[in-house]
Length: 479
Image (tube, rainbow, N blue to C red):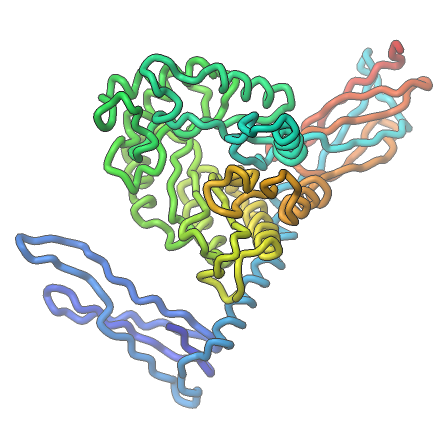
């Protein structure tokens, strides 16, 4: 329900509970369009009585001299929703500059530690600290060599982060014979290109997480063996892990023991708890699960937020920001783990924006969504799900068409990540060999010409830590 308020009004909500006491909550509303959600909370079962806490009525009274509230029309509601999104998007540039960039002071010295003054230098960003990723499930899975080569090239052009699949049902069809050979190949290819890796999922209560040789979920000791064996094999190669998938929606397995097993196997691993429907309604069940995990001291480092349920919903960007704020209160880094806006032709749902999900709508929304997420200080990673329509779990869910040609979303995200969010700068060191530039967090290649020869050095601008970075350049370098 939406109300158009002319002037300030006071609304009071009356709550009827089992003991029939009325509770009112006065709230001031400013002029404009307001959405009012009416929620029902099933809070108790006493004997055979199902007790519910719910809002019985909402009363709105205009203060003296103010215009009476009225129901807003569809056009007014849409305009207000669009304006809220525009306000959020307008603020992203300043937030990105504040949270994703910093000033770095380079102190350029020679091999003896002497400053190199009045030296022309340049830096070019060669890597982002932020993780822009995709699952890599289509790697070498296509029928033609040309398609496989195109998939690999497109992946490496855009991403610095890949999700590797470990779905038990297909990964270990015959007990004791997991598909390590294929995973080894994918991991080696990613490592050669500096693409960081996440394993997903080791355990899952869904059918895909149950091996065909098991009658239901394997026993805890078998689960533990799997976690230990896989994480041990890829220790130092796969940094990030979603040990249990979608735990708030499935009764088993619980997260407590598996995440402790994972921490024992690899104390340096980054552990993520991942679930869906979060951007639809905040996923109260998932939030409660995380609250309990914190109380129980379950070891985890990041919160994974899937972003494709409901599947045709265009999540309002102001709601996305509010939910990210809500989950950031846990003090953990946030990850968008599965993002799938499609170009399927289906009607857009849940938004002021009408029309269908075509290639233009897919690209427009993806760019806006990435801006909002990249601007949020708690966000660590965004993972697309899947790269090509040829293998996408949702029709039209890829950044590439089935023939591996690039859709607009691929081109626009490539421009966003590798041009707009990319730093290249040049300048000259002062008399003390110092030069300052401002750049995105990541790795840079510094170049200069010393004694007629081109020399280079790599430096990293981190979000935290020293702002002054010493760079050693040789006075001469062999050809």
